[in-house]
Amino acid sequence: MPSGVFARVYEIVAQVPYGRVVTYGQIARAIGLERGARVVGWAMRYCPEGLPWHRVVNAQGGISLNNAPETVPLQRALLESEGIHFDRTGHLDLSQYRWEGI
Image (tube, rainbow, N blue to C red; front, top):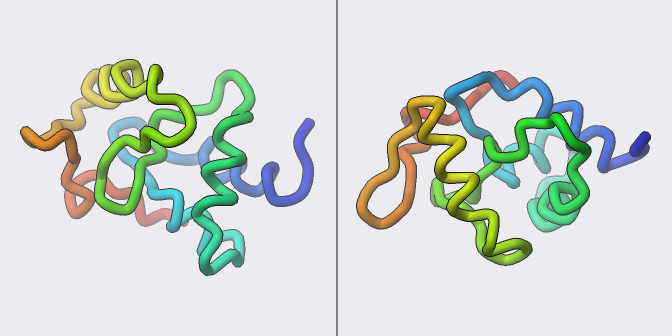
């Protein structure tokens, strides 16, 4: 079972509702790491099975390529299956889909 910062990240990810997304920076701010989006990204690399990892996107509403580019098509497909639409540049509208419940 993860502890510390990673556990706090996973607690938030577990709460993100179907059809909504959060950003790495949003999670970082919620756990008191004002400039900790990269720490959140690192935690997401080790995300426990069963968490909706696909609902975490970058600050531009895009899917991050840094850590696992092979998961991009899967993440997009999972988000689209929840009714989230992407524009022609591969970004979603954060003003429409961002979850503000944290």
